[in-house]
Length: 147
Image 1 (cartoon, rainbow, N blue to C red):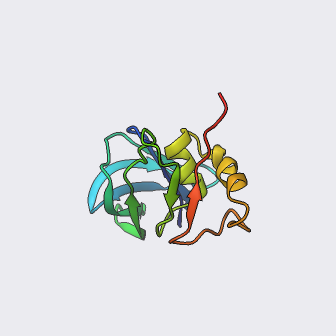
Image 2: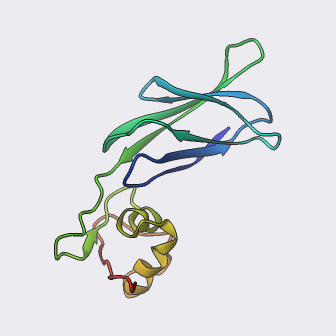
């Protein structure tokens, strides 16, 4: 069983997804509080959209696979940090990379779409060899996007 994606935007949208065995009941927890119940698909994939706002901070995200007897058969738990959105109203157009950052997540916060990570990558080719490997302490330029 896996949690493969934890993604969020500046608003209230937070999406979790992963893999489990096919057609199993799953319970989703944040900091040991149940936030939802879902069922995995025929192929075992699952996704869950959180319906309440999650403030910036540190969290534990847990998924329990519920067996046919109603008891927890498998459990996976991962730490997660939701960071404060970057305020782009000021003149500073840089970001200092912190543990847990990714170009995708930065692009989602700054530009509204993770797919725009390539803009950050292209603007910082002198520092980034592989867009999947960025390191805490790096300082990246955040280019203004053409409208």
